Length: 552
Ligand code: TEU
Image (cartoon, rainbow, N blue to C red; front, side):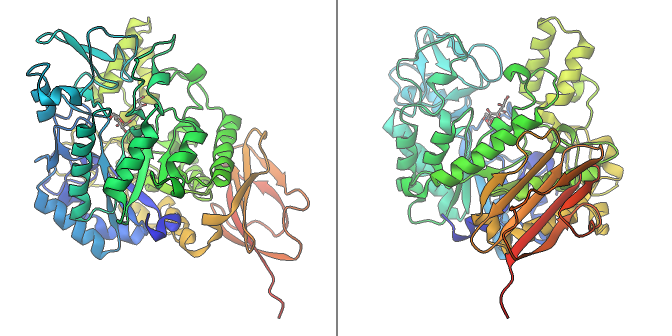
């Protein structure tokens, strides 16, 4: 694990939508190279790039057909090597996205597997004579019939994403060999796609749910990750983060505890399900703010006590934009985006920031289903219609929930295609690109972008951000999230107001250690008058640091 892990900030790039050097409809690797100076200025330590391997792009690259080759749409291996070298020159490491729960059905292994039941690669995948009731995360049965052999193969995601059989030791070796290939090239880390789904219940049991209990954090997953650690990570300085679907705190402690030699840290999604009414993603609902605080607080305290390490995030390429979701994308867009940034970056863990979040990009308000590209959203739309909603109602859900909300092209400047390309992009731009863009944000010292840059710098300056323990002072408050981070030598106080109404707050007695001094490190409004009672403004955010007065 790299030494800087606890001070590091990771920036996530969705290359298809980041920047097109070749001025095409989709972004490319040289486009990332073009933007490295900007990313270095921002101060991020790692770039996680979502998959750019050869792929039929049914799930935008999460359907890999060749792990060793770069999809020509993104460039060449020489482009990738240039990116590695240019990033390294700026002190930035490149993290690759490893998708090994499944491959594309166009992968050579799957094509071989189709040749017959006795083919060597047949057992790289999961075949059954009869399907069980497990459901695909993208809708419908998780089993697809293959007529040649008369068997079904498992696909927890799209039909063209066949699940790999990790029980097979030769499959595991093939995966580790591939990961070593990239590690040897000099990548600085890996993000492991849905890695907690790789070990399935060998009996393929059923219950009355969608089957997730029989493959989530499955029976051999820790064993497999420990093997991956021995075979790939050991002796290398790699930052590794596992994407954990529907996981538990206890498992995440185990995945990320350094002594267990599995991963550096984990993503979980519990805090992003607070706007799923009754657990249903494809339903509209207000978000449960008290629930959000409870979940984040439980994970802060639980990971700290258990010796695990959190990856912190509001946004990624699968989630709607956070300012539209938990903030105010209208009048208080700048204030609420800054508040959300501070609230997250004050926590213990490694913050991840997703392209465009740093300029407060919002959901683009899709109007027509024809504007969308994402396979999950298109399936969901059909299912919503089938469930009885009319087109307008179905579209209202898609507009709020779709993964394409975060996949619109990055907004660099106010030119015709926002500096992303000189050609019509593959997914439409948000209408606000004329004023919400990097060029405008760079020019405004008071912008959300500058606020993020300060937060990233603070993490490197104050050890308490990495080490301090966490305590929530307002667990039940309907709009305030106030927490402290405390180490022996320092304390932080983070006050976040999730709302536009006037709100006052008074700090309880005894929170500030006797005789300690305070400084206001960051706020989204001019400094309030001194004192421990505040009249908070819309979406107000305050970050204070306390420290003992050194006797002179
Ligand atoms: O996502 C895993 C995952 O389960 C989700 O976040 C998913 O997009 C969501 O739950 C659907 O409701 C990862 C990737 O991040 C995603 O882009 C891929 O589509 C998916 O794995 C399959 O590889």
